[in-house]
Image (cartoon, rainbow, N blue to C red; front, side, top):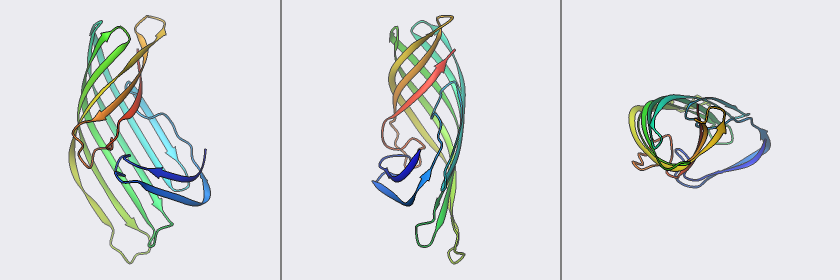
Length: 189
């Protein structure tokens, strides 16, 4: 993909509308975000690098109820060479979660997922005249609620792709989920 401009609003730490215009188009390669049964995601471009590892497991106790746990690790690094002075932001998240999922109708689901994430980060200035700024490490609670569908994949009859809209109802400013609803895609085997 080639980017000429990027507008973020309500995404992660960008609560307010923020527009990035690139002097020359940048090339980026991205992957899936948030596969609930396990995901490794590496993203890179001229000014951004990121990685994410999310894994979890659960059990479908009955046809209408499932529950499980998960762990995640997210790291991102973004260069802002077009600012004066230029700087680089680094941000990390490591956390644990549990989830409960109800299937009121065979392929439809609702889910609640409490999480506790440890967040940290820093801003490095490249001109050497300004001292680096450190984001104080902090435990951040999240409570994701969502609804969606489990789309059967065939085979043993239990495999499915889940597609959900989720929202963090706690809305801590340091939540890795931002202030808007987001789409998550996962696989159950």
